[in-house]
Amino acid sequence: MPLPRSLADVLWAVRFRFNNQFRRRLTVLKCEPPGEAPAATPGVSVVGYGPDDAAPADVLGALAVRFGDDFAAVQQAEAADGATLWVGSIDGEPQGFARTRPGDRVSGWHEPLGPADRLIYAMATRRASRGRGVSTAVLRTALAAVPAAGAAWADTMVWNAPALAVLRRVGFVDLYEADPLPDHPD
Image (cartoon, rainbow, N blue to C red; front, side):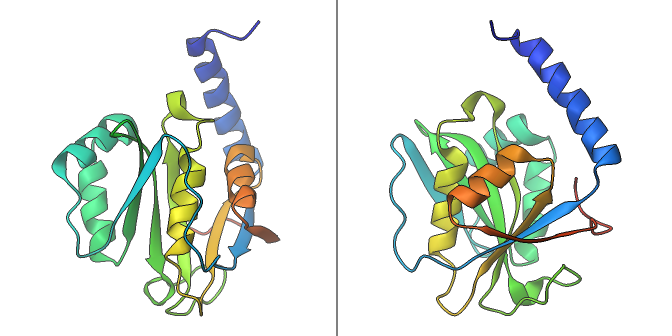
């Protein structure tokens, strides 16, 4: 019998804090761009908002409810730094997102990145929508926007099995483990 939702959330939070405290290693991953339009994920739509595009207030509001009150302010700062916001929705309701940044706008990362490279970061899916293909659709759409001369890069904690699974599913390969960067959000 599955655990009640609130108990499952508590156990997840305890595991997260334990792993974050004692298993502080990252997996660095790379993906060559597919060079083709992504396969559609039934029921999931994805929209990208580039640095010069204003994400609609209702989209930012929905993401703020799910991922933190400061989401709109963080997004404004990220866009000013060249980030694209990729939003995955089900029935018009935002359920998850990821950000990408051109490699020439990334400094101090594990690898030197060029202007055609893209760093994928800050990926999240609403807990109630996990397992419905939101992150897969978001990542595939973001990967399709990587210039042919570049590659996509990501890192995540070694213990973050859901993130590793979706990154590998869309074509990322593990390169190596590394220590977290000083400003890493995990």
